[in-house]
Image (cartoon, rainbow, N blue to C red; front, side, top):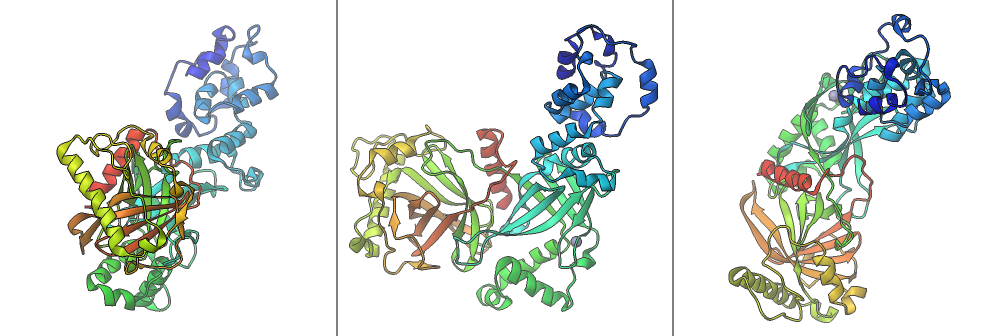
Length: 507
Ligand SMILES: [Zn+2]
């Protein structure tokens, strides 16, 4: 209404007999998507001549230009102003521009004309109607989690399931496969199709449960069938989505095999519920750009972890998980106030040396937590602040990094201590800095979880590692190099809430 009132305010309001009626602008775009009820009748009722110096005097091309620059959600109320506006708003270039600017549709929309679908239909019945499912999501499938990215792609909305590359190639790009798509085949309503299986798109259903939750369902699961029967399908699924064989899982955990079967069955029906994920908000003084990383998790393969900064701590939250540490849990926590000065490469080869440094840092943290205050500032630890808690001033990490120059800020040689196992020998041989941190370990089924000491190694802007002291193992993480639209948190609070929410669902 604001827009309507503003525009009408240019001249006397004679042409605006309906401007104060009906719904708010945000609600009207979808609802008002049907074309005119009766344009002829409107014309008869319209005022005979536009008032002096009114917007109505402007040539139609100019009005098309003006209307095209307004948010699409404001246009339905504008259409209620008068028949002339209403007629002009039928101009498809206006809607083509809205599709492009608001949803990034750069497809040649003229193709639509063949099917009789207008850009206005695409805007209202597809893009606006399904705008709440655009962005990043985590499916609710036991401990494994997952990452779904729903995007506008050409004239489709597609749900892509992101899968980590095959173990242990963390630097390889993510793999993805479509789970569903939505498009306007005819002008009446959008069609949802399930893309699962190898037989092409088929009938599916999407239900938007609430703002940050939706579910999908396949209506033709027979399309998921493969010639070799269920067993063969299960094998293919394991190989394609997890890069694993029945045999290697069987050898590791019988329980895990049962879990995999369960997940397979839920995916088989493509009957899943998704919860929204936001990308972490970033600040210029963060240690590195926060975001999504692929990390090695021993025999569990590669998992997706979200790195976020919270003042004096950085957190790695699992977006995909495993039966030990499920998705949603905090796999690592890095104490940015406690930097560890790594020794030269020769001494670094000695596991006991790294172990000593990490345990020393842990002791210091413990003392600070007990005593609260601390006088001495050890040469390794830089300026101390209040004991570790959530939040804290932003910029501490960067301050830590700049206040401690020396060889490490330029990059110092790095090598894993002898005896520390790594999925791959292909890890960076120089690092920028190292911090004390803790890593979460647990028994199968997330039994007796425990935070254990470790060392966070920052290699470069896109890679870091974590040495799990007790496990004597090393995880390497590499940034997911993909840009995601509609994935930013509306506020830092919304992001924190999302983190808490996925963590509580996991346990
Ligand atoms: Zn299906």
